[in-house]
Image (cartoon, rainbow, N blue to C red):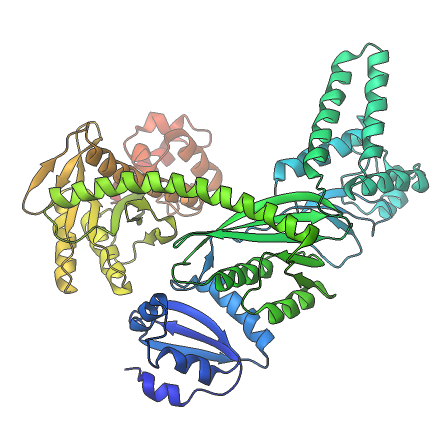
Length: 604
């Protein structure tokens, strides 16, 4: 057994990261410290000055680990990576860590290309972005390629010229000047590249002028459809340019402007990406686990997690207020960028006005998000209260878990679990199971296996629902008893038309009124767990072509197996077919058809 007091005495007085775990060995918190000895001991001293969130966490700590580092900066980077890996319950978490697209101009090549990328490399190319709107990036690239006939291939141009390769289709349809032919003036080609670079740098007037000239040319030659296309593109680009204009920025440096709106249990951070004095995009980020956390902790957690996952770090961050670890975060960002990064907290002037604009947007988004979530929450709470009364339960149904078992082509079975927290889908808690100990299609034994595995991981539900009837309930009831758990358990059974009909346990059956709110709630759960199983099937569908009951049949190779599955859909359909049905498939004769059917009859 882990002796916390004994381990506290052995903590080193050095920087590092500490990892708190619960009795099920789940990571519930990750933090960094300048002195591990001082920081970790604080949690287990007098709790009167601790926030409620910290008190709750300390009650659940059964053990801890630590990792020493050479510096606080190394500890900060390690902390960010571990939070991303474990997503601990008591840390403030960024709900998504998506990366953003950039437009890359490969000026490091003799004949540059303009492409979309999500990675920034130190390769001598020019990068523009990030862009939060992928469609805008695609539209911009399409507009550029319609005007400028740059190559899009990644072939070695010098080698192609030496070997006398024939140009591709783009050359013949006049979408590329064909530098691979060796007949393109590089200076003229680079003039086009320079114009594009100016456009992406914020000087769009050149591209607009070129498009206007093309529109006029088509119009003068009575090619009105082509002229209309350019008219629409010019209009779209002008709209984009207008949206990018921002009067508060008076320089051409790259900046991210960050402000936050928060309530007791929600926080929204909005970031404006400003490149060359224009907004290239903006994005809202919702944070979870913010209850009981100060604004400086929430903001600091966001900035650390967000910029650790980003390829590009701007020269300047303009933030609404100071935050936890500002100095060490500045050092981290400067190290990642390769040059100095400054973090400003303006109190007045143009930058403060810019912050207030971003904060206003964050407030508006959080209000809309909160209203939507509140309506869903209230609707779900009503169904939970009804369900609680219907089943005669005493405690609130804060966590409901639903399970389903499905067979994969007569070979394997899989199980799925969906989770509802306070009546709402909690997709980060969903789980998939591959059945390990059960052979064949035994739904009862399979359901028992996945529940036995699930119960060993703690954070148990207030109610378990099974997609099935009394058989599944009976199998799982035995598992609960063997594990010493007493959790309300019901099956969700269907009618003859495969629609939700009611709930059943080992003692009673409750048919639900299909016009009631509780019926819609239960039916929604049953549909959700079923659909989750279907999605798992789809993810395994490619694999079934490499492993199925057909693999052991002599004379059935990949092509015949694919043809069989495309015609019949699944193993059961093949098994129930006739010899003449099989011989209709190319390559399968009567003898092989009989062999296939004979083999499949043996498969359970």
